[in-house]
Structures are given as structure tokens and as C-alpha cells.
Length: 364
Image 1: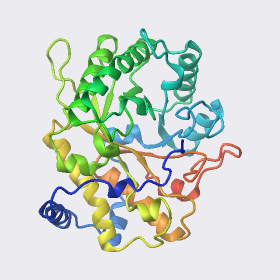
Image 2 (image 1 turned 60 degrees about the horizontal axis):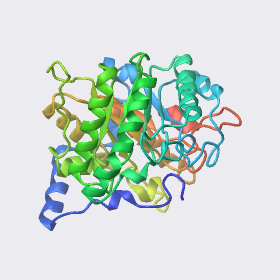
Image 3 (image 1 turned 30 degrees about the vertical axis):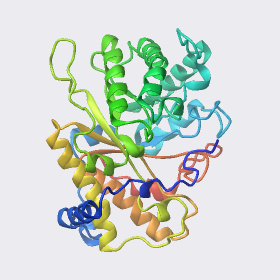
Image 4 (image 1 turned 180 degrees about the vertical axis):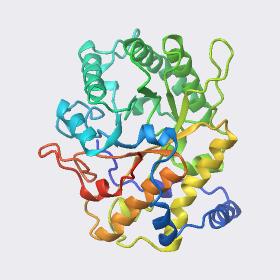
């Protein structure tokens, strides 16, 4: 099994159902984006943001750690100092990817190993004790549920429901700084299965976490393009038990465009006006989509550029733009970080990638 981002070019896997759809999509991009390096520079002078972006600030992932087959296999095990360092560096939120499969029984009642649930709770506690405003836990790399067959999915779903039942019970008394992300990067299951999964977890969580933020993600690895193609494909209109609209929901997207620049560093240039326009479109589209869907908030739960990218000037410009556009369009930005190609944080030294730190906006 490969670590995160084992070379799959996911940004090119979104199918164009017809040439006309491809042309229409590119036309939308050109018509709705007008970014440039100079315009972005002017925007970066604007400090602050909405209460939402101020609260979330810049976020960071603790990747390849608790989402590995077993903690310690892909990266050093989590330590309390990491979260103190995150807060000291200016991060205000953290995403904790968690794999549950290898710690959960294969038959009913699908009990999670108590030592693992305790460990997840310990790490969540460290993040909250460090003063971070928001902490996300999820189901990550639990590929046993991401099944093409709807019938196979339905057969696997009770185990997933049992997992979330236990998670929801364990963290029911935690304050609203803790958020639950249902499932990371679904890309095989059908949209019917996606909506069934989200609905099942929503019901489970709301039973004892009535106001907990629940984060939903679309298909195709949470690529915004899937939402662009199927804007009403994912159900985001949920109600609570009392019949009122559930407003404590968010939608998550991931972005590593252009992948030749951010993943394998085969492309060493970035920063033309068209580059900025393409990037801005991601955020402007999601902002419009959010407004059309009850102003549901959006979190960019993963983005990043490999440390092997030799054009450091272009890499800095890419980071600057990602954070700036996220702030401008009211999107929470949580950078992917792990002990591999996206080594934003060095666990051994406590030092951070200076280009990431330089790009983080002043949210005050």
C-alpha cells in the first residue's frame, strides 16, 4: 500500500462526458475568473476576513500518521509537542486523518479496539489543549467502504455505521471546536451510495451531537470539478430531529492543481495570468455554489506542493495565491502536511516550511 498521493494524477481523472461539456467548462472558467498576479498582490494587502475565516485561520493536516495502516508505519507517531508547535507557528485549525479499519472488528457489533479509540481521543485532546480553534477527525483510507457496487456498499455500510456510532458516543461531550468529516476522498462508490452514507452518519451523529459540525465531501477525491459537473448530486440539505434546517454542515474540497507542478514537479513554472485565473475559478465557483445551497461553508481540506519543486519562486507564488483566494472567497484553508513529499512540518526539529509560513495571511 502506498502512502498518500502515491503518484496517481487525480486532477486528470474527472471524465468529460462529451467534448461540448469540456468546452463549456473551459468557457465558464474564462468568463468567471479574472485573476492576475498584480490583482492578487493588491488583495493580499487586505487583512482579516470574515468571522468564519478568522476562526479557522490557516489549518494543517497531521497526515500519514493516524491514517497509516498502523500509527508509526508511515511517519513518527503523534506527539503533544506537534500541536503546540502548530499553534505557535500561527495555525488555528488541524485536520486529523484517522483510519479505523485495522482497529475495528469484522463482524457485528464491529467494536473499535478501545486502545485505538483512547489514542484518537488523546490526540484530539492535545490539539484542543494547544488552543487550536478547530479540530477535524474523519474516516481516512477506509477503502473497504468505497465500493462500485451499490449492493456491496450496502453490505459494508453497517460496519461503517457502527464505527461512527462509537465515535459519536465517545466525543459527544466535546465542545464545538471538534468537527466530524464523514469520509475522505470517495472516488469509487456511486452518488446514491455517497448520499446514503452521508445520511446514515448524519442521523447517527445528530442523535447525541446535535450541534457538531459535520463535513461532507463529493466524489472524485473531493475534487471541486465533480460538484461543478453535478451541482445537485450530493445532498447537503439535512434537517434535525425537530424538523429545523441543519446549519452545522460544511462541504470539503481538495485541490492540487496543476498536478504536474504540485505532485511530481515535472512542471517547473507557475504564475501566468491564466494560472491565476484557473486557481481563482476554484474558489469563485465554490463561493457561488455555496450561496446556491443555503450558504453552506466550504473547507479546502487538502492542498499542497511537494518540497521537490525546484522553482521556489513559483512555489511561493502558488502558496500565496491559494491562501489569498481562500481568504477572499471565505473558504477555510487546511494544508496537507506529512512526513514525506509534503513535509510542511519537521517533527524532529519543530521547524516549518518557510514558504508556507510566509504565505499564511494575517487573519487578525
